Picture 1 (tube, helix red, strand yellow):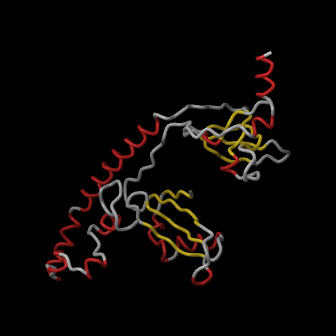
Picture 2 (cartoon, one colour):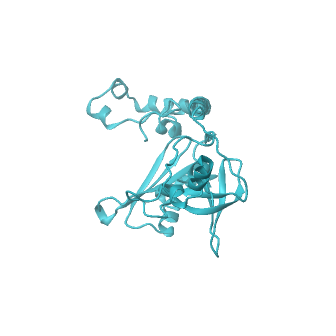
Picture 3 (cartoon, helix red, strand yellow):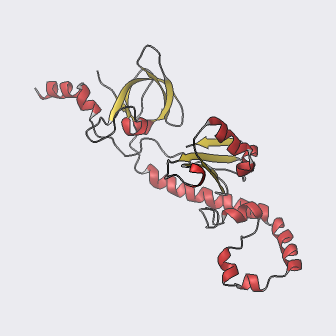
Length: 252
């Protein structure tokens, strides 16, 4: 009786759709690193916000992985032309040399122990507070000596960036080690039927009492980074890639 009950509940479609979503990671962390400035960028679109100047209510933001340098631009609407102009225009000129772009703070220090400004220009920025309340750096300023010191700083630029890379790698290894302790591995093979996390895809109504899962999909490809290529079970399959943490095995 118990075995029959368990089997009937397992294949119940409503039970599967309303099953809780596990928040434990299902794949080891894969740290993303960058070896030199402006070769790898991440981009995101934020909004909508309350309308501001020029009726802008969106913000496109790009961050360099190495220096954590930020470029941002307010937009009224989001179009492919505006995003292209953002990268090719003055707002993000450095991106034109990028090798990798991921579509997913300039004065404070990050995990590298350096500020974004110093990693880009090889010198620390002078902030407005130092002008209002003069510091020793401002009081001892000499234009001739300053130019000489700036040229001297260039000699140490490569060494400082190499040390920044080492510190960042050590920090990310520490984070990955902590993250991997919580991993509860869950793997699928080609041909498996799966549900997808509805909070991630928002394919169904996500309000209260809405389904936690949506689908079903069939696994048609597997990557070595824990992502799966899925085909929607319809006449015209829609193929996309989702991470393993957003999937759950489907029973029919």
